[in-house]
Image (cartoon, rainbow over all chains, first blue to last red; front, side, top):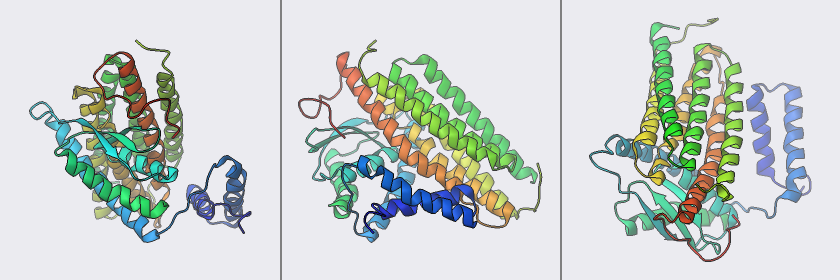
Length: 162
Length: 92
Length: 121
């Protein structure tokens, strides 16, 4: 089982991806999709340095919903900030955030989240993964922002990956 | 297709073209190399979205493949340019 | 343009509204790219097109083709998924390149967050 499916979630994702791209569930496509889903992770396994342990699907679902909502809100905020940039210049700033998340996959997920949300850009991570340098488009209160960031994004990721 | 959707498609294509023109302004004005790469990155995303809109306009699936290709090539291009900037050999 | 079925009005309206919303967000992003003063501020507006702009246009495409083919045609959602994987990579790399280059030319940016070397992430 483990040798055939080193990454069952990845296999499933590739299989679904193939079917959606081809827009059909004909036997031929099912077979090709299954071959892709089984072969690709097996061939890729030697390239993956470490396995991710993903747990707590409920937390994942809640985090995805939360990020989707934040993306929309942040879009509206950035759009507003852009449109009135001449009268109210946005208070952009770099923020140093102390991180307790250490897992590489969790950090990758965190960097995706911060970059996808328009109001923040992940800029730099310390070598020992203890401090994150983040650029924020319109910063109101630094301490509150850090608290909010750690609570909404970092804690669920720690629950999922650690 | 009634007039409503056809007009909305034309209007959104027009808006996308204005956005592309503005991004081009940033490509030419710079001032730094990373500004130009950022604007080029934006241009390819806009081009990809325009392909999707054109797909709706001509009711054809083929444009989706085009959009997918633009997304992949644009990503590789911006990635290579950004990586080049990071090597530190092209300090202005 | 081959039209096989007549779309219901609400579907056309939803598609039209989504397309206009997406393109307007993309336009705001471009305006931000031109108007904002600082490079790191300018890194934020492009995310408007790659998130909500792409979501709106893909959703419009899904709605329109599903209506046209009288069944779910979902492949357009691959575009937002692809973008949400690729855009962070380029944005992150551009942010690091900008920090590096600005430090080299002595501009006012935060120091490297810890001493020594490249981070391996």
